Length: 354
Image (cartoon, rainbow, N blue to C red):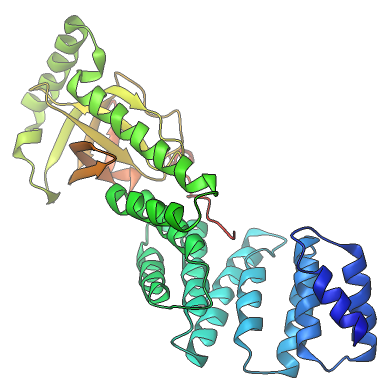
């Protein structure tokens, strides 16, 4: 028992400690039927990045104590770290959702269980994002909402940051900023939420500047772009920006030209500024398209454009602009050409296990 207590105390260190592993391994030889010892070993193995070993230890703990939410939390997390190939990663990540759901079923008031479930859905979406299915994002948001109601057992700083990640991906920037502010208020010394917020506000300022200046292009270039757009519009009857409604514009086709590129630090979505034949400018957000494909001067044809109104206030500043959201890259043509298959990519985003 002394070896166990000594090892458990050492295991509180953030870094891997071989002495802690030695103490816990010795304790297991003396008390092999104690579930918590196996969980402690799993925590040490996690820090060692021995995720396969951690999974084995967690499963041993669960075999000794079936209804064990703490062990299920750890199993859901470690499953997302394991996989020798894409198929294994897919199956393990999907299984991590099932394990998290089982933990929730044991105690629906456990905020940590809901948070783990939200992260599992979030991981699964970014693993399979090329299928354009936002169901897992919505499930993640729903789980985070349940987690937020909890008053104990949950690092809400982490939850706010990860939920902000979802909102940022969806371009719900006001909600993202609100959650990043909440994370900062709970942990002022953690710099990442502040950095993420600054990235968002800097990008919003860049979008505003590029829209109002029409990409800061000379009049001669703008006239050339307008003439090119009018050629296609007169020939094919395309719509223009002032004919679009907020939301889906099914059946309509917009033709426009890229007049500016925006640096989005996450790379998701690709963000540009486009102009129609009336020289009206809006942002264009394209998901799942490889970087470097969209260039200034490209003529873009957008089928069934989805127009979104974005309004944000933060730190005494305000931004208000419209963006066209393209969830599926094959809905656009670039200079009259279809999107090639090798231009379409999956999604990737960074969350926190702080």
